[in-house]
Length: 256
Image (cartoon, rainbow, N blue to C red; front, side):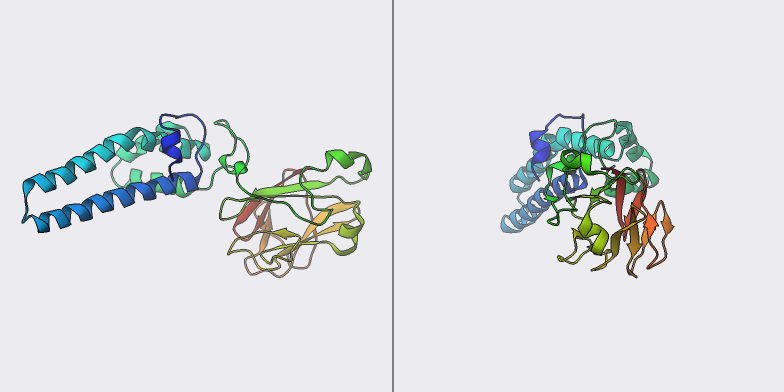
Protein backbone atom coordinates (compact mmCIF):
# COMPACT_ATOMS: atom_id res chain seq x y z
CA UNK A 1 0.00 0.00 0.00
CA UNK A 2 2.89 2.38 0.78
CA UNK A 3 5.24 1.14 -1.93
CA UNK A 4 4.69 4.23 -4.15
CA UNK A 5 5.99 6.41 -1.30
CA UNK A 6 9.18 4.34 -1.20
CA UNK A 7 9.44 4.89 -4.97
CA UNK A 8 8.39 8.52 -4.62
CA UNK A 9 9.68 9.86 -7.95
CA UNK A 10 10.60 6.62 -9.70
CA UNK A 11 9.15 6.75 -13.20
CA UNK A 12 11.21 3.86 -14.57
CA UNK A 13 10.31 0.22 -14.17
CA UNK A 14 6.95 -1.43 -13.64
CA UNK A 15 4.14 -1.53 -11.08
CA UNK A 16 1.78 -4.46 -10.62
CA UNK A 17 -1.99 -4.11 -10.42
CA UNK A 18 -1.74 -4.84 -6.70
CA UNK A 19 0.69 -1.99 -6.07
CA UNK A 20 -1.37 0.45 -8.15
CA UNK A 21 -4.78 -0.37 -6.71
CA UNK A 22 -3.62 -0.59 -3.08
CA UNK A 23 -2.27 2.94 -3.40
CA UNK A 24 -5.55 4.01 -4.99
CA UNK A 25 -7.35 2.46 -2.01
CA UNK A 26 -5.10 4.37 0.40
CA UNK A 27 -5.96 7.64 -1.36
CA UNK A 28 -9.66 6.85 -1.24
CA UNK A 29 -9.48 6.02 2.48
CA UNK A 30 -7.65 9.26 3.34
CA UNK A 31 -10.03 11.44 1.32
CA UNK A 32 -13.02 9.66 2.88
CA UNK A 33 -11.67 10.24 6.39
CA UNK A 34 -11.06 13.93 5.65
CA UNK A 35 -14.55 14.29 4.17
CA UNK A 36 -16.27 12.62 7.13
CA UNK A 37 -14.16 14.62 9.57
CA UNK A 38 -15.23 17.80 7.78
CA UNK A 39 -18.91 16.89 8.07
CA UNK A 40 -18.58 16.08 11.76
CA UNK A 41 -16.59 19.27 12.41
CA UNK A 42 -19.14 21.39 10.56
CA UNK A 43 -22.01 19.84 12.52
CA UNK A 44 -20.22 20.25 15.88
CA UNK A 45 -19.30 23.90 15.28
CA UNK A 46 -22.50 24.97 13.54
CA UNK A 47 -20.71 25.46 10.24
CA UNK A 48 -17.66 27.24 11.66
CA UNK A 49 -15.47 28.25 8.74
CA UNK A 50 -12.21 27.60 10.59
CA UNK A 51 -12.86 23.85 11.13
CA UNK A 52 -14.08 23.43 7.55
CA UNK A 53 -11.03 25.33 6.29
CA UNK A 54 -8.70 23.00 8.19
CA UNK A 55 -10.28 19.98 6.48
CA UNK A 56 -9.95 21.63 3.08
CA UNK A 57 -6.29 22.40 3.78
CA UNK A 58 -5.73 18.77 4.83
CA UNK A 59 -7.33 17.62 1.58
CA UNK A 60 -5.10 19.92 -0.48
CA UNK A 61 -1.99 18.94 1.50
CA UNK A 62 -2.59 15.22 0.87
CA UNK A 63 -3.27 15.85 -2.81
CA UNK A 64 0.02 17.73 -3.17
CA UNK A 65 1.96 15.14 -1.13
CA UNK A 66 0.73 12.28 -3.29
CA UNK A 67 0.77 13.99 -6.69
CA UNK A 68 4.24 12.78 -7.70
CA UNK A 69 3.93 9.20 -6.34
CA UNK A 70 0.48 8.93 -7.96
CA UNK A 71 1.91 10.05 -11.27
CA UNK A 72 4.91 7.73 -10.94
CA UNK A 73 2.93 4.60 -10.01
CA UNK A 74 0.47 5.29 -12.83
CA UNK A 75 3.27 5.49 -15.39
CA UNK A 76 4.86 2.32 -13.99
CA UNK A 77 1.46 0.57 -14.22
CA UNK A 78 1.30 1.47 -17.91
CA UNK A 79 4.85 0.17 -18.30
CA UNK A 80 3.72 -3.11 -16.76
CA UNK A 81 1.40 -3.71 -19.73
CA UNK A 82 4.16 -2.59 -22.10
CA UNK A 83 2.60 0.82 -22.77
CA UNK A 84 4.56 4.10 -22.73
CA UNK A 85 3.84 6.50 -19.89
CA UNK A 86 2.58 9.06 -22.41
CA UNK A 87 -0.67 7.09 -22.54
CA UNK A 88 -1.58 8.84 -19.29
CA UNK A 89 -2.51 11.82 -21.46
CA UNK A 90 -5.56 9.84 -22.56
CA UNK A 91 -7.09 11.14 -19.36
CA UNK A 92 -7.55 14.53 -21.03
CA UNK A 93 -9.99 12.99 -23.53
CA UNK A 94 -13.47 13.46 -22.07
CA UNK A 95 -15.17 10.24 -20.90
CA UNK A 96 -13.53 7.93 -23.47
CA UNK A 97 -10.01 8.67 -22.22
CA UNK A 98 -10.92 7.77 -18.66
CA UNK A 99 -12.50 4.50 -19.77
CA UNK A 100 -9.41 3.60 -21.80
CA UNK A 101 -7.12 4.27 -18.83
CA UNK A 102 -9.35 2.28 -16.49
CA UNK A 103 -9.11 -0.69 -18.83
CA UNK A 104 -5.32 -0.31 -18.89
CA UNK A 105 -5.16 -0.15 -15.10
CA UNK A 106 -7.09 -3.42 -14.79
CA UNK A 107 -5.13 -5.21 -17.53
CA UNK A 108 -2.68 -7.89 -16.27
CA UNK A 109 0.96 -7.06 -16.83
CA UNK A 110 3.06 -8.85 -19.40
CA UNK A 111 4.51 -12.13 -18.17
CA UNK A 112 8.26 -11.93 -17.68
CA UNK A 113 10.43 -8.96 -18.53
CA UNK A 114 9.47 -6.36 -21.12
CA UNK A 115 11.17 -3.24 -22.51
CA UNK A 116 10.50 -1.38 -19.25
CA UNK A 117 12.04 -3.87 -16.86
CA UNK A 118 11.62 -7.10 -14.94
CA UNK A 119 8.25 -8.50 -13.95
CA UNK A 120 7.30 -6.94 -10.57
CA UNK A 121 5.41 -10.07 -9.51
CA UNK A 122 8.40 -12.42 -9.56
CA UNK A 123 9.27 -11.30 -6.04
CA UNK A 124 6.04 -12.82 -4.73
CA UNK A 125 5.43 -16.37 -3.51
CA UNK A 126 6.28 -19.14 -5.93
CA UNK A 127 4.46 -22.44 -6.04
CA UNK A 128 7.18 -25.09 -5.92
CA UNK A 129 5.65 -28.44 -6.73
CA UNK A 130 6.60 -31.46 -4.67
CA UNK A 131 6.67 -34.37 -7.17
CA UNK A 132 10.16 -34.70 -8.60
CA UNK A 133 8.97 -34.36 -12.19
CA UNK A 134 7.62 -30.88 -11.38
CA UNK A 135 10.62 -28.95 -10.17
CA UNK A 136 11.50 -25.33 -10.67
CA UNK A 137 14.82 -24.54 -12.31
CA UNK A 138 16.29 -28.03 -11.82
CA UNK A 139 16.46 -28.97 -15.50
CA UNK A 140 20.03 -27.75 -15.92
CA UNK A 141 21.27 -30.04 -13.17
CA UNK A 142 19.73 -33.06 -14.89
CA UNK A 143 20.24 -31.95 -18.47
CA UNK A 144 22.23 -35.05 -19.41
CA UNK A 145 19.13 -37.16 -18.76
CA UNK A 146 17.07 -35.62 -21.59
CA UNK A 147 15.70 -37.87 -24.27
CA UNK A 148 17.20 -37.17 -27.65
CA UNK A 149 13.82 -37.23 -29.39
CA UNK A 150 11.83 -35.13 -26.94
CA UNK A 151 12.72 -32.15 -24.75
CA UNK A 152 11.02 -30.95 -21.60
CA UNK A 153 8.87 -27.88 -21.21
CA UNK A 154 8.47 -25.23 -18.57
CA UNK A 155 5.00 -23.82 -17.95
CA UNK A 156 4.86 -20.47 -16.19
CA UNK A 157 2.47 -17.62 -15.45
CA UNK A 158 0.48 -16.01 -12.65
CA UNK A 159 -2.72 -16.81 -10.80
CA UNK A 160 -5.45 -14.25 -10.05
CA UNK A 161 -3.57 -13.10 -6.92
CA UNK A 162 -0.40 -12.39 -8.86
CA UNK A 163 1.47 -15.37 -7.43
CA UNK A 164 3.99 -17.04 -9.69
CA UNK A 165 3.12 -20.42 -11.19
CA UNK A 166 6.10 -22.27 -12.59
CA UNK A 167 6.73 -25.96 -13.21
CA UNK A 168 8.95 -28.08 -15.46
CA UNK A 169 7.98 -31.42 -16.99
CA UNK A 170 10.39 -34.05 -18.32
CA UNK A 171 9.23 -36.59 -20.90
CA UNK A 172 11.69 -39.19 -19.63
CA UNK A 173 10.46 -39.08 -16.05
CA UNK A 174 9.05 -42.47 -15.08
CA UNK A 175 6.31 -41.08 -12.81
CA UNK A 176 5.10 -38.59 -15.38
CA UNK A 177 5.06 -41.26 -18.09
CA UNK A 178 3.14 -43.63 -15.83
CA UNK A 179 0.44 -41.45 -14.33
CA UNK A 180 0.78 -37.90 -15.67
CA UNK A 181 0.46 -34.71 -13.65
CA UNK A 182 -2.82 -32.92 -12.98
CA UNK A 183 -3.36 -29.18 -13.20
CA UNK A 184 -6.17 -27.62 -11.20
CA UNK A 185 -7.42 -25.73 -8.20
CA UNK A 186 -7.42 -28.72 -5.84
CA UNK A 187 -4.45 -28.84 -3.43
CA UNK A 188 -3.87 -32.46 -4.43
CA UNK A 189 -2.97 -31.52 -8.01
CA UNK A 190 0.67 -31.62 -9.03
CA UNK A 191 0.37 -28.10 -10.44
CA UNK A 192 -1.97 -26.03 -8.27
CA UNK A 193 -3.49 -22.86 -9.74
CA UNK A 194 -5.46 -20.74 -7.27
CA UNK A 195 -8.00 -19.18 -9.59
CA UNK A 196 -11.81 -19.25 -9.51
CA UNK A 197 -12.01 -19.98 -13.27
CA UNK A 198 -9.88 -23.12 -12.95
CA UNK A 199 -11.64 -26.41 -12.20
CA UNK A 200 -10.54 -28.56 -9.26
CA UNK A 201 -8.96 -31.01 -11.71
CA UNK A 202 -8.80 -28.99 -14.89
CA UNK A 203 -6.21 -30.59 -17.15
CA UNK A 204 -3.47 -33.19 -17.18
CA UNK A 205 0.11 -33.27 -18.43
CA UNK A 206 0.93 -36.58 -20.10
CA UNK A 207 3.73 -38.06 -22.20
CA UNK A 208 2.92 -39.34 -25.68
CA UNK A 209 5.59 -40.54 -28.13
CA UNK A 210 8.31 -39.06 -25.96
CA UNK A 211 6.80 -35.55 -25.95
CA UNK A 212 4.83 -33.49 -23.45
CA UNK A 213 1.09 -33.22 -24.12
CA UNK A 214 -1.79 -31.59 -22.28
CA UNK A 215 -5.25 -33.09 -21.97
CA UNK A 216 -8.41 -31.29 -20.84
CA UNK A 217 -10.29 -33.15 -18.09
CA UNK A 218 -13.77 -31.94 -19.04
CA UNK A 219 -13.15 -28.66 -17.24
CA UNK A 220 -15.90 -26.11 -16.85
CA UNK A 221 -14.11 -23.25 -18.62
CA UNK A 222 -12.00 -25.25 -21.04
CA UNK A 223 -8.33 -25.47 -21.96
CA UNK A 224 -6.90 -23.56 -24.91
CA UNK A 225 -3.63 -23.75 -26.84
CA UNK A 226 -2.81 -20.59 -28.77
CA UNK A 227 -6.40 -19.42 -28.48
CA UNK A 228 -7.98 -22.66 -29.70
CA UNK A 229 -10.11 -24.94 -27.53
CA UNK A 230 -8.85 -28.48 -27.19
CA UNK A 231 -11.31 -31.35 -27.03
CA UNK A 232 -11.65 -33.01 -23.62
CA UNK A 233 -9.80 -36.31 -23.26
CA UNK A 234 -7.65 -35.77 -26.36
CA UNK A 235 -3.93 -35.10 -25.68
CA UNK A 236 -2.41 -32.14 -27.54
CA UNK A 237 1.33 -31.61 -27.85
CA UNK A 238 2.91 -28.63 -26.11
CA UNK A 239 5.77 -26.85 -27.84
CA UNK A 240 8.00 -23.98 -26.71
CA UNK A 241 6.32 -20.70 -27.60
CA UNK A 242 2.79 -22.04 -27.11
CA UNK A 243 0.27 -20.08 -25.05
CA UNK A 244 -1.66 -22.37 -22.72
CA UNK A 245 -4.89 -21.07 -21.21
CA UNK A 246 -6.39 -22.85 -18.22
CA UNK A 247 -9.68 -21.14 -17.49
CA UNK A 248 -8.80 -17.45 -17.53
CA UNK A 249 -5.20 -18.08 -16.53
CA UNK A 250 -2.73 -17.60 -19.37
CA UNK A 251 0.49 -19.60 -19.15
CA UNK A 252 3.55 -19.51 -21.36
CA UNK A 253 5.33 -22.63 -22.54
CA UNK A 254 9.10 -22.60 -22.97
CA UNK A 255 11.95 -25.06 -23.25
CA UNK A 256 13.07 -26.47 -19.93
